[in-house]
Length: 327
Length: 222
Image 1 (cartoon, rainbow over the protein chains, first blue to last red):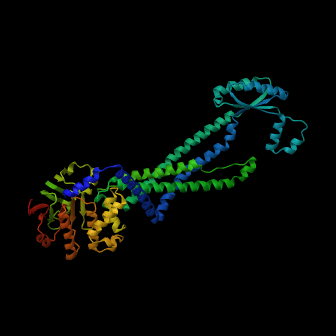
Image 2 (image 1 turned 45 degrees about the horizontal axis):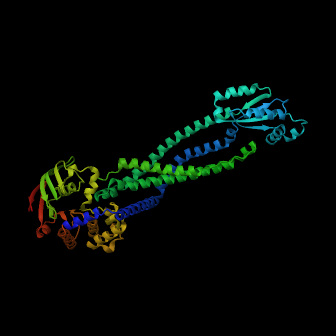
Image 3 (image 1 turned 180 degrees about the vertical axis):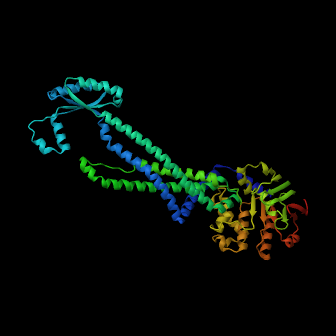
């Protein structure tokens, strides 16, 4: 006995770097082993695993798809945003030299970031391209279009309090016929996007909670099924932390696979919609470049779903795992 | 090593299983616990392993009162006790090797060292050839020996056995008692519950006899 004890305590006291490294590598090895065995066990019950993974995937696919949709809308609407401009239509009597002078003057205003002069000829050719009325325009003997100044304003200048007096002053300039202000559109668009984004966040929160419950329930069943094993582990001195680890891995796998399947679903949806976009593109004379999940989006989805899996598992384990239970 | 002071254990459904139990087992001592089934033998062993808590009284193991042991320390307490169960309590979906390795694996021991120790333990119970087998494929006696290998693999200072030879033929049972004597020789404290009267009277060790939860005979305090 005495001999045994000293051997044991010697081992403890030589807590040198070598031993620590060995412990650490044993720890890593243990994690690898658990990762592989839990995965293998899940694959041994493909149907129940698939059910959980599919439920998780569907719950995640909805908010992920909405985020992708919003990103696309935001990007397609980016043209409008960039043209958060004030288009100043000059009177028909104003020639291009006068317009250039006015341009010089306006360019000095602090609100103005850039200013572009669109000559009558440029305006006409642009109109020809977009309107599809080229043959009718060919009939015209003279160019009816005015010179236009496109003012791009600094974002700070787009605040209503700043914008209104500025617009009013330009309107009063003698050279100006009328002006069109896209800035308000851009603001509305921004506000709508922000609202939608908040809605998507709320939905994601709700569905995330659903994922938590789905995975938690699967883990609860797994714990029920493994009650004997847990009991035996407890009897030989497994800590709660050790017993828990296995279930956290299972939760992480459910989350990860659910997230991956959700990404596949979203990609499929985007692809389907992209093939359906052709008629719309024909109507608008432009191509809509619909994009799927970005790499960051994919990373966030997979990481988030894995963490949700671990969290769901943690909750179930906290409620149902009892090492000391011997009934 | 193990001391009971006026220990009572009462189950709500079947009343008092142990009544006013007091005894002390010295370090390195080997003792038999006997009595009819239902006398409280299993309950007593469970109290030492903290599988159950006493209703009243004190249990002191290795100088530490179990009542003071917080729940999170229970695993570490159990690692110092090798428990052998009548129904083996093996994991049937794992190999013999994995079953025996379990008490070491949960401590985070490097696998090479686990391998060495598991084979040494299996060798001691004569099952080295079966390490890849699954417990279900083994006979009752072999399963029991797997359970014993699992109990000793962590080299615990205390071994508790609940009817370890209940299902074995006399020859196998003798081998297992030989094994217990070997542990006794290297200083392990052993407590073995059995109703094999003939055998315990042949072996010259201390006998604690329980009847309806009371200690009615103790062959000797050392």
